[in-house]
Length: 84
Ligand SMILES: [Zn+2]
Image (tube, rainbow, N blue to C red; front, side, top):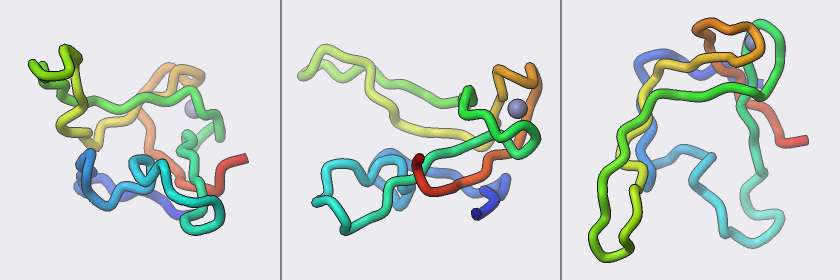
């Protein structure tokens, strides 16, 4: 398990493992993020969405460090671990 550090931001087309979807099976291990306190995956992060005219949809443009656990009902830090 690797603890995500606060201060490290993650862009949609950057090196965040969450956005590495669509790769062939076995190339990049799938991961999930969990609350460091309770281990639950009911977590969210603050982000900006921008309106994309061509696709007529809101698209994620920036994901911030702030994470919130909806089980603990408070701010948390995230653990990255292999997806179950
Ligand atoms: Zn929690």
